[in-house]
Amino acid sequence: FPLGASLQGVVAQILEMNDPTDQEPFRVLVVEDSLTAARAIQRALEEHQIVTQSIQDPLQVLNALRQFLPDLILMDMYMPNCTGVEAARVIRQHNEFLSIPIVYLSGETDVALQVDALRLGGDHFLTKPFNQVFLNAIVKSKIERYRTLRRSMFHDSLTGLLNHTSTKTSLDAALNQAQRENGRLAVAMLDIDHFKKVNDTYGHPVGDQIIRSLAWLLKQRLRKSDIIGRYGGEEFAIGLVGADAEQARQVLDRIRGDFALIEHPYRDARFNITFSAGIAAFPGGDTVADLINAADEALYTSKRAGRNRITI
Ligand code: GH3
Ligand code: MG
Ligand code: MG
Ligand code: MG
Ligand code: MG
Image (tube, rainbow, N blue to C red; front, side, top):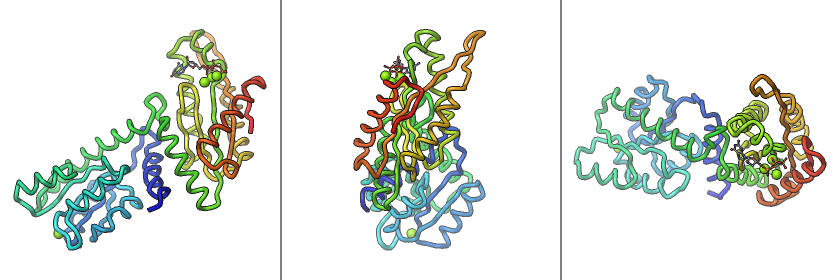
């Protein structure tokens, strides 16, 4: 796989987690060479509203992971091309799948072999014939933990937006894709105006609330496929997938205007806050660092020109 394709998998997972209240159904990949066994497992999970996909050939597991984006892998031990443990080892060699839960489901009853399987990258061992209630309980609790972990790894806790690192990872992948497909990507840097004064005047918790309100507005107005990150304290980095600089300017200028109209309550009074932004786009810069630098320079121009405006 080229770098881009492997990043796409991570990014799809990151974006899927963009909404911290997300209620997406759980997804389980079943790796099982016996079709009959696979169907029985899938039926048991689907009764609990879990979305499943099964593959018979463990050599297809990386492909399936990247296309189906499961929250958990339910893995047989003995299959024709390779064992479950060998498949788990391959999966764990990929950073993006370091922490996805792998649960073995096998007829193997030798405890020493079960323990070995857990040592080599597995998270749990269930034996066949499986107990449907127990299978579902294990699967659900593993997935809940994994989703919580993913959320805290990739997201900012104040806003639920992407954090600094996953913003850059996501922008990298989006730029990669734009380059491969002759597509477009606009990158914007936003910074709240005179924010120090806001904190000084109204206090830090009010400042936090303003950061959250801008994050919320951005989430409401941008597309699910767009990248929205809290890049620093009161600074946001945005990737508008498929947009050129002018389209991005129009979208963000509407958001700028609407944000400026929000009346933030403080005691008996209300006050308004603005932000400034700078935009750069591909084609026009060849790395994410180039685009961010260019957007940052444009942001600085907006600030010098008086703030509450957007510069390309
Ligand atoms: P400018 O219009 O030039 O951007 O002015 P500014 O005051 O916003 O300038 P600057 O970027 O230097 O200051 C940002 C301030 O944001 C500094 C810091 O106190 C505050 N800040 C950073 N992170 C947070 C946060 O998470 N919560 C709150 N309440 N304030 C923060
Ligand atoms: Mg088997
Ligand atoms: Mg700043
Ligand atoms: Mg500043
Ligand atoms: Mg600022």
